[in-house]
Image 1 (cartoon, rainbow over the protein chains, first blue to last red):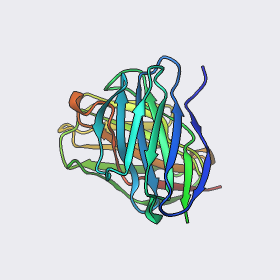
Image 2: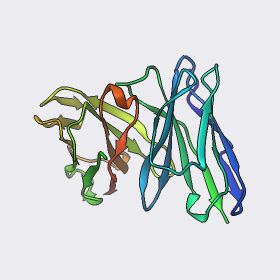
Image 3: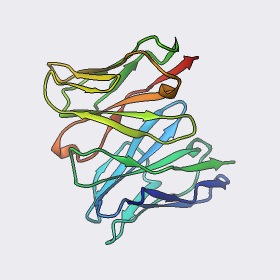
Image 4: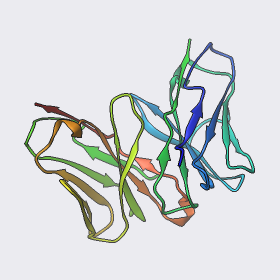
Length: 113
Length: 113
């Protein structure tokens, strides 16, 4: 079974631009979560989608948004990029809504110049 | 909000020595998960603990969940160079939290051959 895939793997943007990251969960998984990983803040939860609905949201500004499609694929969008948004963005999928292990994708490395 | 603290931040050991990382949550957890992230990689699920006082073993790895479900530990016996990586604990608050995980800061393990 194929793992979680994320595209693109690397991205370089400049301040003020916006970016869209994509995540395809493992086949059959309906839960998709997004995390931001930085050396200073570690792994921080952004949001979780299940059955096309945002079920949980972390403490990030409204510039960070996401959505999930009917095939469980998910996208996250960051508008008006700031230097501090440079990070590894990880997507994780799970079979069900709660109490389940998370399968992480390889991540998208975003650099904001 | 929920906070998960993990110590130590770094651990350097000689191959064959034991290693332990500790995790403490500011709130009672529904379950706790452990992940390993190799350098340049993404977090990989190791185990989930759900019951108070639960102990689980995976070969040389022993995981414990405290009686109060607020702390946990991972112990590796006789480390090997393949154990190198960062070990994260991640707490889940229960059904209302969905798959949302609050990660500890991680313990970076290096093993000298």
